[in-house]
Amino acid sequence: QVQLAESGGGLVQPGGSLRLSCAASGIMFRIYAWGWYRQAPGKQRELVATITSGGSTNYADSVKGRFTIFRDNPKNTVYLQMNSLKPEDTAVYYCTYQPYDRWGQGTRVTVSS
Image (cartoon, rainbow, N blue to C red; front, side):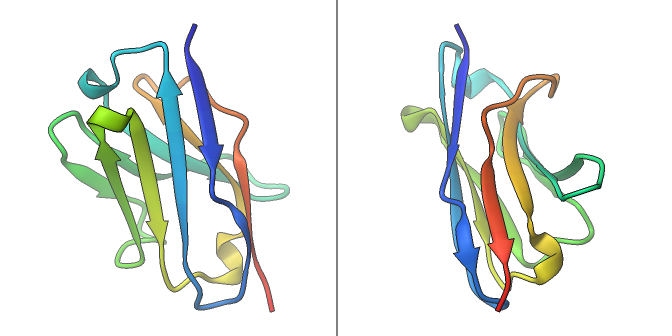
């Protein structure tokens, strides 16, 4: 039974930082590529970042230079470090693993002054 538990969201001012975590259970974590997606109100869910089993990363243009995805295989956890946050980053953030069709409950990020 695969379970994905996102955490770390909250309310932050523009320019602030948050670190999101996704704890996975029920799968062999280290063999999969992992990703973070987000969904803003009234918008389609969009890819934010991915990381392969070998550690290669990819980012949406909108977050390049501000967000970093990384993983801790012994902890079965993937992270998203978010810096220089903007109001347009406001969304519910979800983690997923290849083929990117399963989701946790999500964690809400609100960037506002």
